[in-house]
Length: 606
Image 1 (cartoon, rainbow, N blue to C red):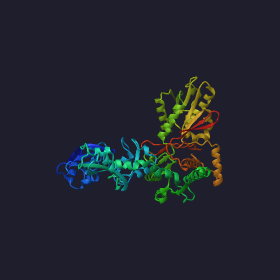
Image 2 (image 1 turned 120 degrees about the vertical axis):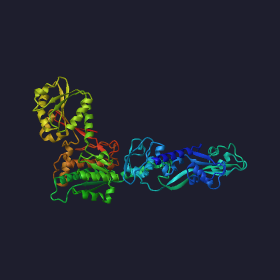
Image 3 (image 1 turned 180 degrees about the vertical axis):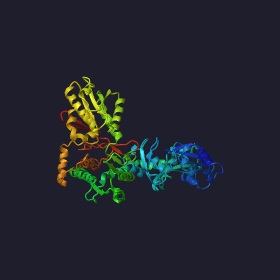
Image 4 (image 1 turned 90 degrees about the vertical axis):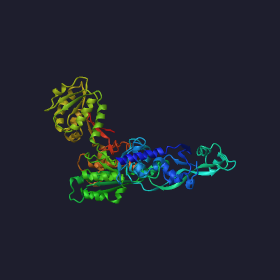
């Protein structure tokens, strides 16, 4: 405790010692000090709390004996920049805390009011180039309060920069000289010359005068020695050009895609999982064959088989060519996905997770692209659509004891209640009768029925009564809202869903229209077989992702908030940045309308 008190006290003394008068000279503010009788350079340095070298840097003529009343000038920034390490206690001067992070691992820093990319670089002893490279989605004008910046502390090496400043020289006034003639002789302004000599009203022959001469020198320094003002002056004029070189140019040269999946080609026969991933890859190739010519730059696809083995995955990630990838497509296996996500985050390589929602790396890792909309964001999108679509409707909850899909129902119900929508509940135990349903419906009212679970059993229990009501209750308008699981019930219930006018929300949907038939024909031509049967269809997933990459990266468009919506055959894409510096999540969800005219319409909510 005594040490802390002493440190703060020393810092406060330092601050009071530099309570000197100031002058504006050539746009910069300087302290000036008038030398007293018999004072030496060393004594003045001790008195002011700076080094003799610093005094000489700005006052070269102070090398010899100091003259009484001689003026010495120091820039105001010296007050903190020249403190000894023991005195650099930021709490004595402001709210910013001392940075204690060591090593080379990246950390995340949320920028505060008044911070800039330059102050962050200096604070963490990182390079401007490194910060730009590690944060490609932040343009130079987006470094401000609230921005979450990935920084590698203590990674800055010494570098050359131009240091501009003013040195103060002594000059003996000659006969007939004026401020104007002296200023003109030394290439300074009359105003700056007079400011550097505040006690001299009129030049007199033989009188010593201080001449402020601007200079520029190339200095080898580091983040500790360069001032914040010098750092900003050095980088600000070329920061946009630097961003283009480090981010835009890399984006615009070529696209390297790494597909890192457990095809398990070493097994004979391959397991079902291997066939699914293989079909995904085939769909990706079909996309490149269909639209690859529309890309404005080369797309190079590199494929690796992880063999469903974490050791193999680690070996692949150690390959030098992995660092050249713009995008990696990772599997759903938790450990492999986690490892690849970590590699992407450490090396600023985007990683696409399009196979699972059971990984939360997107919350923290800015390089993760989460294709399957996470449940909280998915529910929020459904609620927003529901509020717009069914404004003025009366909601009837169809309640049963099942818990399937209960999380989405509870979320929807909570928001519906908050919005003040009229609601009522109808308990369904056995098969719902038409009479029981009809008693809950009033003439001239619009209803939307919302089951409390996504179970197939509950859907079966209510469909017959709802189909009868559609025929008999022509005095009412109503529809049914269903869950993503309903997509798997279509083989048995598609016609019934159309009869009662149903809306189903889902992360993906394939209407099996002409686009699907075209892909099936291409698949058969290329691979001499049929697409592997799965839900979602892996071939279509690979095709949709491949088409999206061609329309974005292949045409020089970054995958970020600004990238346009892509409507896929099965999956649509519209990414948005997570709050707090996380990754990108796909906000595009499908609202599938099974209408009474037996049409199927997919509405993409972006």
